[in-house]
Length: 442
Image 1 (cartoon, rainbow, N blue to C red):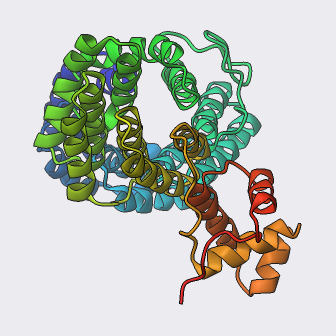
Image 2: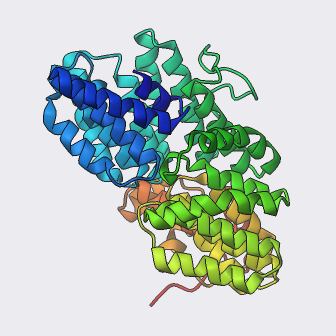
Image 3: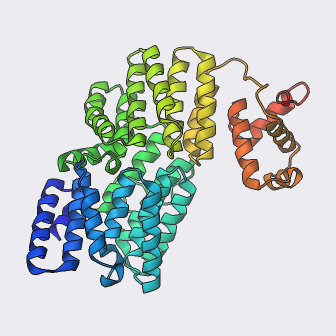
């Protein structure tokens, strides 16, 4: 119990590992197989948080000891710990597979107490994978289950989680996100998961809206807590790079460098590609802030080339946004527009509309004539049909494609033409001499 409490509250992870080891030894002496499995799982999570490599072996031993149906609640089984560790270490698909298995088991057994936590973890996984719409839907579904089963604290956590995804989606948050407010009637306390997730939600929203001062105010206490707890695993403190980014925007580069160094070092040592991309983005922004544009471009372009699209499109899109912003400030218009247009497309396709709009805002600040000869034949046809006043559904029917395909194509058109919306696109086409948006491809 002490081990799990320390882990869940992020209080003292070294103490959690020590408690877990004592529990393992005690369960071995008493022959309590189920408690030994729980203790091994707790030790594994603590080892993972501390940046160790023994957690896989510990979890394998734990999962082999007992079946899920031997526990009153499915979350007591080591599979829950395994899924959590896999999400932290960027192994999303195996983590989601385990979570879905636990969800099915919980539903089959009527284990309502476990379901909200499972939905929270699934929501987090989809957000990491660049699927914020799915993330917010899962969080809201979980909050309904929590509300119906009388778990008021979990309602607050899940509403805050939905608000994190809402911030990426660029829509009004679903929870009351006052500075020290509540969600769903639950007032988070200083050792409560809701307190942490609530600050994450407010920090994410502030950063996506370009308010680094508020982002710093919300994220600084979280950063302080995880550093004090001794957490090394980058995947368990992904908000650190957001905090670094806010500090850079505020001109506090020395503080940003001090905070970034251990995070980046752990991401490199543990081979966390998404966390490393976020850290390198911050390095590029630091160089840009110092006026070293060429060095910033080398760092950011190198990271994008080396790490590729991977499974974290939002991180890639935000790195392209950083590159484009840096090039724009250096008056390198062509390179800036290319990077910002690609950023807008990547972010829009990932559902991160707030960040996509930031990329389009940066592109609009470049000035000069927007290139209009870049649309493909399909993109041009979709734009023309929209200009005629047709809805996405009508365009899809005319072209014999899905509505989703039309939406994705329109996102590319907006990015290429540097327009923020359907209305702006229609205005642009109306002002063009022949209503064209570029030459069709042969």
